[in-house]
Length: 407
Image 1: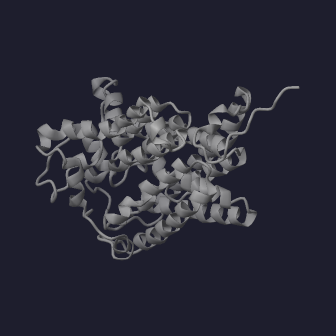
Image 2: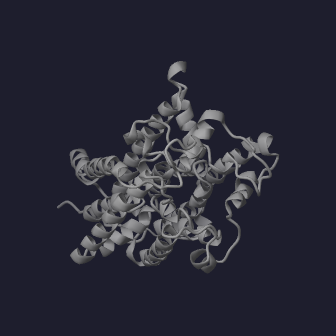
Image 3: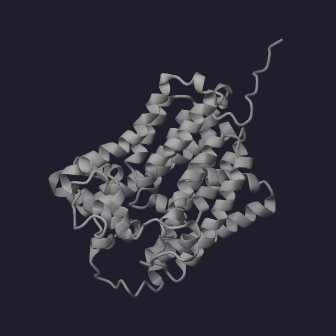
């Protein structure tokens, strides 16, 4: 009689690596049904919403003909241009001109506050075009395509990782759906770094789950080149490594050194900027030019710098809600390294004094949506989340398309 495979102990981050999964044909069917189809449907709906939004009032502070320096008006093709607003302008400037020092580091905003991975991928792809085709419009199109490819890759990996660690295809499907309906999920398709961050972070955690430490460290290093907080993924990677060694220091091996590739990514960027800035810590110190200086969490939440009349209130309560979910995740998720990942990405911004963009930064934190998916096992909770997220997504994207600040 054939002995059935032994089930791994719950809570072991990489224990699922030995659990047989569905056959390849089944994986392809579930990938299409659970990830690619919802992705195409929600992106299609956003295109329709973005087209119809032009018939609604636009932000009067940014009338037609405004300078494109801040990231809009690159092309009259509306269905392309709606994916570039606000911080997109900084990334486009890097693609076009590289990094520049505009003034005193802590007091003057300069583009090296925006990390190089995404803009230089766009720049490299743009240089493959004929010289006459290397325009801002071409770069914008390339960046939007790259973002959507990274989004598809990230969601596919989220689906497989959640299905393995939570032992539930149903939870994996719901997690992906919640991520696509989240009010800030439209940022995944923008000329910004959210989709890149999602793909690299889940790649790092997937590799750690499978105990492929060199791949986890390499993905972490690329993540550290994508955004300032990317280096923090080192914490969940270390947690996953120690869990794989049963938290016994004597069982640590030299393969842990692969995880040093993560901070190496940040250090390499800091060193590369030295000829421009003359300051090794310039990429960190420049954050002060955006008002991000040491503050207590309750000051950030209730007395933030640079508040906006509506969005600040919405982000305050959204962040508070996500913090509650992050705490709950330690009870709801089996892989605790995922919980650590969500916590280390969600908490540090609360010490910056600036609440703006926190919803956007939370969008790639997939463990939060895994926890919500567990809570969504109750039909009433599930439909409440779907309705609130979906309606919030439409409203936020309309505002974004019409040049209002939404993150």
